[in-house]
Figure 1 (cartoon, rainbow, N blue to C red):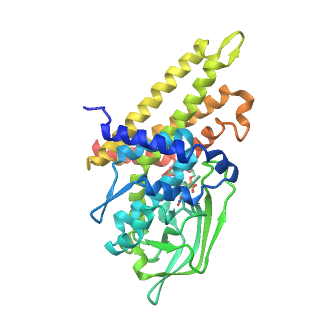
Figure 2 (tube, rainbow, N blue to C red; figure 1 turned 90 degrees about the vertical axis):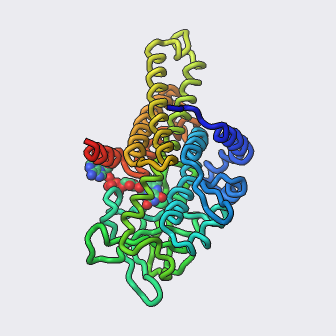
Figure 3 (spheres, rainbow, N blue to C red; figure 1 turned 135 degrees about the horizontal axis):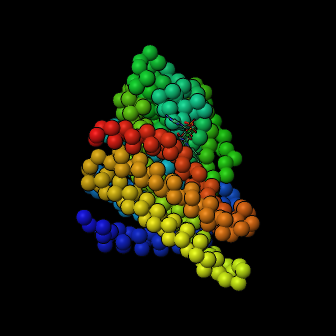
Length: 380
Ligand SMILES: Cc1cc2nc3c(=O)[nH]c(=O)nc-3n(C[C@H](O)[C@H](O)[C@H](O)COP(=O)(O)OP(=O)(O)OC[C@H]3O[C@@H](n4cnc5c(N)ncnc54)[C@H](O)[C@@H]3O)c2cc1C
């Protein structure tokens, strides 16, 4: 068993750290204030090759999940909300197109997405269909030369700033639950699309937006993958994106841990530093150990993916364990700052809220347990 991270990834991380120091850190406070990430940032990310894919001799290759996960952990230590906006574009937008799109769709839509010139999002969840994806109600009716979409997608990360959305809708209402849905690529500037940015308090400065579709025409060539296989396409997308979101969630835990540790080392109460109380030192040892355990599960899931091995169980365990520790360490760290922590612009304030957000994206904790249990039953 080799636990070493390759020199190449170490070098990438160094470069990415430098990139964030130049292009993110000086701007971040302003983005949190405006609750928006400028589109220009995605273009700079694309220009410097940080958008998850590599274009080699006209062929798109996914960058290693080990690398993507490590970079997202690092970014999320600074801002889980910026990390999720990048992740949503890559893992919820580009990945399903890459996995299920036709050669023509990939040729047209992936190059500008890789350059950060066009932005993609995923419109799947509806008010009555979250964990239960098969219950989606959005309608796709066959029309001359394409489809007419009607319905609302309730929670879409990057929905306010994206150009294109991958949208799931009922194309085959009389088919079984597993064969009713299809996936469509929708141009968000189409007539009949409206966007409503929601007033969320987690994962700032990214946006969460409601997308409504009223008689929106989608040409036939924008059907993504097979008609009637939308459920399978979106679930496969989530299975993969569970790995990067685990890295992001781990970063949320580490960001909180480092802030909390720093506070414990400097704040004096009852004549000594917080860190000198044995009760606190035990908490620090335990939380650090559990962060490391979640990291090992996350890197194992990424390694399985990169090796072409089955990673369903590993990805669900990585997501489950990283969320558990991020939630706990987020509250722990905020607690160490006392009343100051409740101020919105306090550096520790975001971590418990963003850990909460992580528990919802790519399936709740209950959903992860269902997947883990299903995989256990296959093995035993
Ligand atoms: C910040 C944020 C960003 C998001 N971004 C996107 C996006 O870009 N695109 C998109 O399509 N969606 C997005 N979502 C939606 C997200 O994927 C859903 O919130 C998530 O899938 C859960 O669905 P739900 O909210 O309907 O909760 P529900 O599915 O209604 O779950 C409610 C409760 O029931 C539990 N539960 C569900 N099923 C079971 C079961 N079988 N057994 C036991 N308990 C169960 C859940 O664990 C939870 O506790 C986002 C959500 C948030 C908060």
